[in-house]
Amino acid sequence: MVRMELIDDIPVFGQADDRTLNQIRDARAPPNVDYEVARLFEDVQEQRPYALEPVPEDLAAMASDPEWYNRSREWQEMQSDDAGELWFDGFEWWHARQMDSVYLRHGLIFTTWRLENEVHFRWSYSGREQVWCVPNGEIRVSVDHFSRAVDSFLDAVLAAMQKRVDEIGRMRWLRTDCSVNVEQLVAEQALRIKTLEQFKVRSPNTDWTSARVLFEVLREKVDEERGKT
Image 1 (cartoon, rainbow, N blue to C red):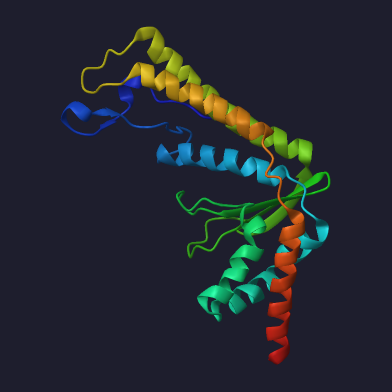
Image 2: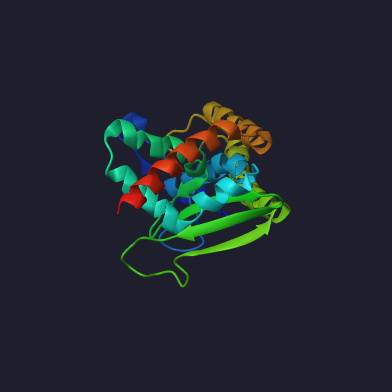
């Protein structure tokens, strides 16, 4: 659940006539966060279309294989810049389905890909301090379950933002230690609503034919190198 601090309790930042309010905070547990929640909201909404786009099973099987992925990465690191670009091009569609949260304390890397009516959700942690009970794992959920969970989070954050904007709009601005452009605040919120609506219907329309060609060339190069050792 996303909560907002009381308006009078929100700290200000900036100097002199440019003092304004800090961003959204998640008050469930200390330390509170502001930028991080807004960033997570943006990342999840951008990731949604890729996570829900079906991926060819043969490509997903190879890209999701940690052993082969790591071997291909090692190959890339041994190549010249031009040859190494093949790795980035070949995995472009896969990396588009990854989301890191390094801006959070002990952040994880998430990878999501859809096979038919299931979404695979994988997470990994590379930090030195062990804080997660399951630092690396993968689950599969139905497309409907995944969509509802993601949309529930996005809608909750947006609703909390809207409630705050409406509150400020009703009472106008009474604090004297900083200023807020109410008109701009309303316009920015309207843009957030429109943007989320667009992401909910967006499809990446990945060119799987081209992706497969690049991936096959990469696979041949990596396997060729392995044959030499």
